[in-house]
Image (cartoon, rainbow, N blue to C red; front, side, top):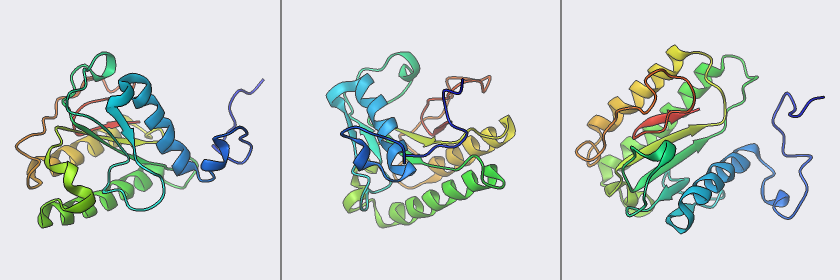
Length: 183
């Protein structure tokens, strides 16, 4: 008996929400958003999957109370979701390229002073970069975490506020912490 298909696909979905998620990246963002709403209720918000979003797919308000996997997070928390195909050739490189594109956008917006849709970055205390793919090995995870930390540590207007210790030093299971990777 197979519970899950070898490849993620939205095509067979049914129900009232199925029509909203024709693309796997939209479904992944909503899945992460639903998890945040389940944990933080009205304190969590999910951006529309259509249009520009300021590199903020979801966020949790400043006065949220943390516990469980989020017990060491600071708030407000900004969440970015990226869908990656695990069956693609060299998924580690694909994930790295996805982060570099996000980094490029954020660097440009930081230089401009976090205007418009990017304004919430001025108050952010934590950043969670969520990927839909399993990382191929611990080295790729460690390198991605370090690249995100290094960028946020020198990024204008965020470096003074964000902190970076990880919840899981062993690298097993999800890592949920400021500037960390959940994958």
